[in-house]
Length: 70
Image (cartoon, rainbow, N blue to C red; front, side):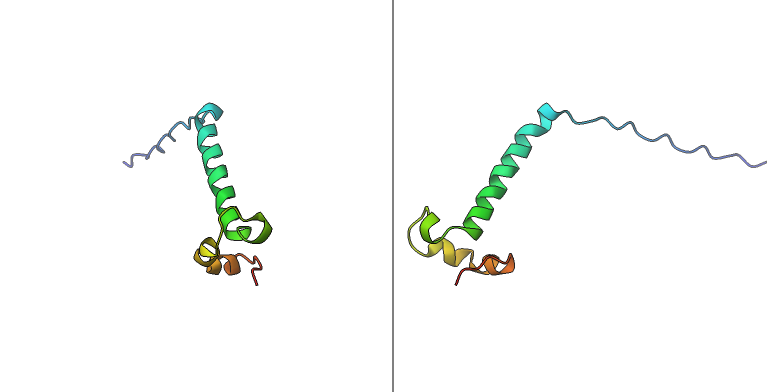
């Protein structure tokens, strides 16, 4: 006699509250905005750091993302 195999019960999915995820979302948003600024706009009139150091550090990333630089 064959015994039917009962399907395993799916684990309960508990939602993550907005209060828990909001600080992480803000942190990563600020981090990404800073990254986009340094890769895409840290040169010329909007430069916060004088010299060409930041430009040279992110030069290849700038071209990879399609930002013009020269």
